Image 1 (cartoon, rainbow over the protein chains, first blue to last red):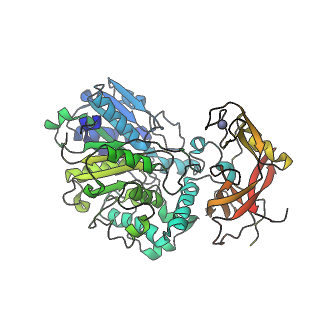
Image 2: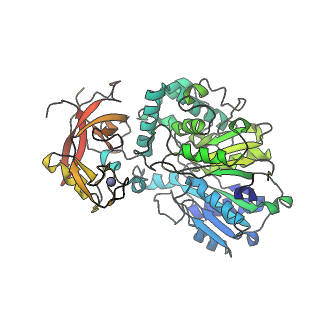
Image 3: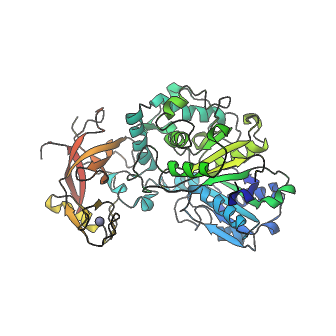
Length: 392
Length: 143
Ligand SMILES: [Zn+2]
C-alpha cells in the first residue's frame, strides 16, 4: 500500500509564545513560529517553496480568529514559492497540512511552511466576545434563535449523546480532568493547576450540559510546521512525523443541526476513510491527539476512530485510567485546548510530532510510534495518522 | 415554571436574502412554511433553489402543520447580553418528514424538565421588526 501522503513528513515544528492577552500582533507571533519551524527543520527560508495556512485570507473571520494570510507571510519573509494555499474550507485545520502534503506528492513543492495563528484572547479583550462566530457557515438559521455560540451547538450534541447512550456528566468530565493533569507537566499550558471531579461538577454552566471546564481557552499564539518531501528525511536533523494516512471525507450534511447522527457529526467519515488508507489499526495507536474545542468533540473522535464502539465512549473513558498518560490510549498529552489553550488544532499536531521525536519531556509517552491527530468534528473535520518511522 | 414567550433577548436578525425571506415572513398568517418540491414532495431546510433529492427547480414554500418533536436541546445559561435569562435552544423534527429539522427556541417548558428530548411541540410565532420567528411550545399549550 502506498498513498501519496506517505511522500511527505513534518520536518520542522515551531511555535510562538502563547497565552492570554499577549498584546502582540498576529504577524509578529506567526514569524516567531515560522522561523522556529524552518530552523528546526534544518532549513533556511531560501529552501521554503510553499506556504499554506488555515483559514487564511487575513481577517475573513474577525476578532483574532483568522491570522495573517499566506501571501502576507510570503511577503513578510520575501519568499519565492511554487505553491500557495489558504482556506477555511477543507478538512478543518488539518486541511492546510494535508494540502501541503498533496502539493509535495504532486511535485509542486519540496518544503511547505504551514501555520495557524490566533489572537483571540487579545482581540476579545479589546472588542468583546464574538458569540456569532461561524454564523456564516451555519447558514444563518441558528443565531436568530439565540444559538449564537459553538457552545450551544455542541451542547446539543452532548445532550443527545447522554440521552441516547446514558453518557454521564462525570464521564465527560474525565476529558477535562485528563487534559488538566497532562497540562500540569506542560510548561507552555495556560492552566496547569489540577482540578478534581468536584471542581468540574461545580464549574459555572455555560449551556447545559457543557460547563466552563468543557470549553477550550482562547489564547494568542502561532504554531508552524514545515512539511517536506521524504527525500529530505536522510538529511533532516529530526526525521520523524511521517504522514501515513489522512482522512478528508465529508459524508452527510455538513451542518450544526442537520447532520443525520447528531451524536457523531463529521468525525465518522473522516475516520472511516483514514483507516481505509492504511494497514495500521486503532490498536496500533500509541497516542491520540484529539480536538477538544469542547470535551464532547474528543469523546466523538474516540468513538469515530474506533477506539470503542459508537455510544460506548462514556464507559471507555470512565474513571480516566484508560486515557491517562499511563493508560492504553493516552489522549491530548499536552493538555489539549481545554488546558494548554486554543491553538486551534495545530497544538495537537505539534504535540504529536514532539511525541514521535521523543521531545515531549516530562509528558513523553514511552515508545510513541503511531499517533493520530484529529481536528474539527462539527461540520468539517480531518484526521491524520503520523508515524515515527517512514513506511512505504 | 412557565417562561414568557418573549425570550428572544439574544438573536441576530436574519440577513436580507431572496432565498430565505419567505421563511422569516411566513408566520404573518400563523403558518410555518418550508421549501417543498412540487415533483417529489420533499421538504428541505435551509432553503435552496433546487430540490436536494430530485433536483427539480419546481420548489415552493408550502405550509406545514407546525407540529414537531424535540430531537435535542440545551439550556443556555451564559449571559451573552446583560440581564438575559436562561433560555432553551432546541433542534426539532417536523411531523411531515423525518429529516425536516429546525433549530429554534422552546417556551413554556420547565428548564429542569427531564423529558424535553422527545417532547411533542407546536409552533408559535414571535414577531419583531417584520420578522416572524418560529418558536415552539408543548403541544396543546394555550394559544
Ligand atoms: Zn424533489
